[in-house]
Every structure is written in structure tokens, then in C-alpha cells.
Image (cartoon, rainbow, N blue to C red; front, side, top):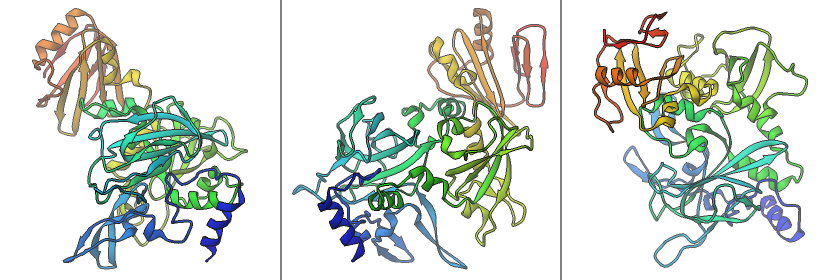
Length: 437
């Protein structure tokens, strides 16, 4: 009864607009009807097919599995799926998708197959002096362009069913509220993509960390003084990582609300707290110098570390450690600018990509007629090269032009300019040369 009364009062009172409003006309969540708000998922489990609306919520709500403790869910859903209210006779949705708050459009992906999001839009909102982002996915069409300023409630596009794993029957808006993890995402991606293009720049889903939009939408509707940064800082931390203080840790610069007032300005390190889904919630100055990011704390939990941290922390009880996924997460947060990655060579023309296998991993590098760049673990090198070195590369690695990547077996070592690198050591050398050992 109370949610319905709240919705009615808001509708007739002319109350101040919510900081973040619902992104479609579907406001059933305000009315206490989640089953009419969230789009269901089709679930086949233990011989039964069901259609639970709970699968449209944020969090671990998909892919059920039977465990000794009961039924658990293995798949994480980073956002909410909102049902359409209107359809044409053929079943196509007719709902407009609306800007949740006033802001600036920073990304529009018009290609239905360019990502699992299908067609999607990202809007940046300056809230309490900090950038917060909303994402609108699976659109049938878009009505805005990057750089365009939009008002709260302005139409961004039409709700649809573009993208992976969705059809006309389950057409919905996938909606997220979150922040950017790194201002250097494109460098991080280029060093790990083996030539696979990033079509979305900074606004690739891998660089957008989301939190549950539902509590934000409800709280903003109820409280005109709602402060989203206070809400985010109040989320429960599950693990902490201590990072060396570095300008490459752009998260703190982009989201200053993470640092409470009173913290010293330039400490040796920062300890950042994260929720179980990897969303950062606060940063504390640390006087303990560290040379590399290290896991500082994990909340005790009856669940395995991997389950409690979305696979970022693993290890046996009492001995937590960052998983490979966790290490990649840390590398993203601390990645330096793109001048030190293979993508840097692109400014000089078409790239040749090569991946070389080592017993302990692999190295990717790229070159064009004027530049050579490589990224091996935490070792990043970039050089301007001349015609002689370029021809030496071509002879040493006879990769057909236009082939994005090719594997070469170990052992391998190269030297370029005055720097040499092998899988085991770095050393100075007197002259430029490249070779296969």
C-alpha cells in the first residue's frame, strides 16, 4: 500500500524531479510490482522450464546450479532488464528509452552486432562534481549522437531486442548505473586483444563498473535530497587491494568521491575497498609503501572466495590471493597511457601483430613502418624505428600483410635499439638487432 501511495503522491504533487529517474515509463517497481517491472528469463533447470522475473534483477541471478548448500546462481547480471509497456500488433516494443538524468551523450553504438549489448548508449552525468554513467542497451534504434546534451526524460532511442541472447518476446531495456574503471582502458585493451578491435573506446562494457540501479531509482524517487555518492560509499566492502600511488591510477582522479575528506593528498599508497562484484566504494591513504598492487583484506564468508568476489579472489580459506581474473582487473586499474602499448604503432599506418609463445605465457607485439611496440607482463616498450629495423622485422617474422596475429614457437629473444628482452632477463645491447634464438 505504501509504495502505491508514494507513486500517486509523486505523480500529483509536482515534486522535484528525482536525481535519477526511471529510464522508461515502466515504474512498476515504485508501485511494489517487481514482476511487472523486471523482464523474466527462460530457465531450464533439473527438467523444469520456468520464467522467473527475478532473473532480470542485478547480481548473481542466472544459471542455477545445485550445490551441497542448495541452489546457487553462477552467472552475474550487471544491470536490470526492464519490461516494455507497449507493443505493436507484431509484438515489437514501442516504448521510448529516456535519459535517467540530465547529462551528455558520450557513446552511441549503432551496430546491433558490435557487442552483447546490441545497440547501446552511454550518458555521462556530473553529479556532486563527479562523473556517473548510465547505460541503455538492446535498443531498436538510437535518437542521439555523441556530444549531445540531453535533459532528464528526453528520448534517447527505442526499446528493442538487439544484441546477444534476446528475441522479440523478451525485448527489454538493459539499464546500468556505474563509473569508469580506467581512463587508460584503450591501452589496456590493445595490449591484450591480439588485434581484435575495440569499437567502443572508453565506454566498452569491460571498463564500466555497475551497481544495482534499483535501490538508486527507489531512493531518488523517495528522497529529493538523495546523494548518490553517499549511497555508493555506503555499499558493503568485501575485499581490499593496496595500490602504489601513481598517476596511472585514474580511478581516484575520475571518482574523487572515493576518497573521504581529511585523507592526506599524496600518500605512498592507496587501499581501495570493493564490493563483492568489484565495484569500488572507498579509498584510504596508506602509509605502507608497496611496489605492486597487493591483496590487503577479504571479508570472512561461508562461500568460496571466488563466489564472494565474482572470481577476482581465490585460494583456500585463510589464504586468499588474486586470481588471473583479479590480476587482469588490477592491471586495468593501473594501466599507463596508450603511448606504451602495441596500439601506439597505429599512428604510423597499418599494423602487423605477432604473438610469441613462452613456457610461462606469451608476448604480443606490433609494428608499422615507423613504430614498434610491445607489452610483456608489466614490461612495456615503445620505439621509433627506421627502415632497416622495419625490414629486419619483416624478415624475422614473415607474417602475411593483413594477418592480425600469428604464433611463433619459443624460444625467442629480441633486441631493439639499446634495449634487449628475453623471457628471462632484460639487458643493454650496443646495436639494434632482432632474432629468433
